[in-house]
Length: 343
Image (cartoon, rainbow, N blue to C red; front, side, top):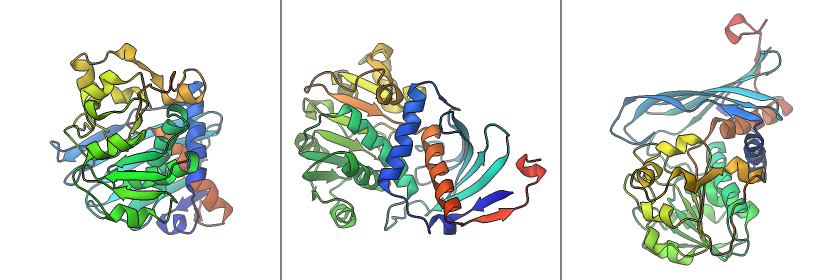
């Protein structure tokens, strides 16, 4: 039998930031211990080839696979970005090849702003929080959110799970966004303050999360304070660049989530201009989580975690959804068929 799970089933389960952080952290640790494998993101951009990855106006289809050895998870994922977003995941038993479940997740059309937080926001937010947990200084008073959309919301909710802070400074990357405070006050106890510029946010925050569509850098190295950690979440393709080359030149520690990050606009330009070399990128976040490399060496270090998003990260969250749906007796079981590669 194969369990079919759709958005109506997912809407009935409770998915907390803590649970998502824990499974993503486990996935990173397995990657750091060479117990995880994935394929690079494969994507055909059908329309909007001059636009950044999944920006409004793009149409694309993507595919990827992930295997987590300790978690015994193998997942094949498909993404569809047209005037909607649809994600289909096939969960297989890695020992028998049997398809256990097919999960279809959806979210609103380009340009729509959801009222709540969903698994996709937590997935990216968990990565941002894990970067800060292992690479930021322990005693901080404020965090900064640059990009107040989906990534900013999920990241702040997850940061509140692992860090203690009194204030949150925010900017959309294009303009002051006073609505972020109203949305996120339900999820965090800290005071949320919208500021008029990215520079203002950077001068007041020792942990920064970037999550914008920027194609030209909005985060400038000359505004960076010593001791700052940045989790860079928004730049996920060759055309995107949130941070300028001076940010990377000043960094004492740079880690990525996968080698795909070397083609991201901001890192690619930093390498091209020799602001940094590959030797300045110490490894992957999985190596930090697994204890193979340190997240920082001194309180004054500037540290960066650059994330493009990985299939092992997504696979861990999808498997969590599957386990919760199955436990609640939701979804629809159908007879196995050769279509699902089942006997």
